Image (cartoon, rainbow, N blue to C red):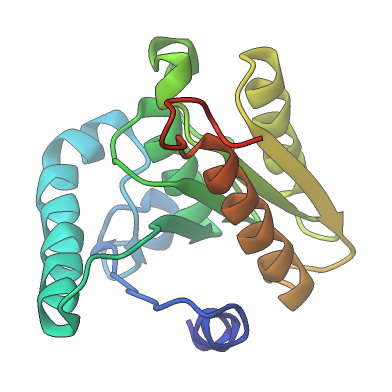
Length: 188
């Protein structure tokens, strides 16, 4: 989280850092905090979690007196699998998703309409056990014609600063290209 906050300062974005729920990761035991990556866990926990996120966003927007001009979901490790799942299922009205050290995701990407598919940056941690899952996500995105970029860095289970910087730059680029101009056409 500290790394994301540093990245926020470098790239001029605010960070809302929600927490997962205890007991959602079978391999980590009841005390491990994780994100709901299984369908059953999503059915049980997701609505409340997403409501908390949207409430936090609303409070910040109310405090600052202006809405966010872009909202990206960034997921690391277990959070990457969940963020990929959110994107593939079209669960949030956001501008894009970045996943690092994980992200095979669950869901049926073909079920999300093409114009509702948010761009996904896949940050492959090349020296980590999650590398193949990240690459599998990139292959799924490619197969379904999803807007994405994949980039590998020679790091272990981490988010390299350059990975985060490239992810934010890519997602902003994509947001700008997808934003309609006054004449109804997309930006070039």
